[in-house]
Length: 227
Ligand SMILES: Nc1nc2c(ncn2[C@@H]2O[C@H](COP(=O)(O)OP(=O)(O)OP(=O)(O)O)[C@@H](O)[C@H]2O)c(=O)[nH]1
Image (tube, rainbow, N blue to C red):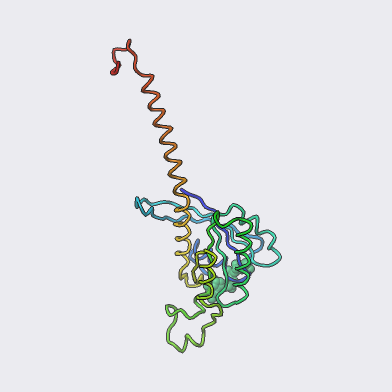
């Protein structure tokens, strides 16, 4: 089992806790209370090694931080040593994207982007113009609350080298896929290190085996095969 530390960052009310609860408990609460400090949850998923088709268990240790400004100074405690960060904004709140961008800047300057997988996530897709969750066109025009375009966030993410997705914690659309992609990405990054470790262990074990063979020949021992 591989373990990875994951942190969620983003403005208050963008839906960080709702995303985590959808992922871990497959539930949604319209009246979720704002997080105080931070919350911790864990969840294990399976991914496949694309070469060997072997199932790999990945355990995520998830730190859901509080988005309210008064808790901002606590964030470094949670993103330090993180393997991945979900930087969340609300597709219906323009300011939340600027806030997400400033989290990305902070992560890049404090953690370094080669050590961290950063996923930019636009939440509340159910309130937007995605046809999958819509009935007729009239309803779509009436209820579309989107203020951040896909193109705007996507080109920012590409520019910054971030993964990017639009999801809904309410309907669950895209949520599992985000965590699955993070798991696959982290495994891909970790795999050379795991292989090197395996090889080192194999080398150690095989040299022990060689040592034993070298000591074994004993000309006085009639059971010795190799004298
Ligand atoms: N329509 C809709 N509402 C959502 C979605 N995700 C979250 N919400 C609602 O948005 C509000 C805030 O959600 P939270 O998950 O508490 O947001 P948060 O980012 O954890 O907020 P803080 O704890 O203050 O940082 C709640 O009323 C949720 O029910 C979504 O995908 N669609």
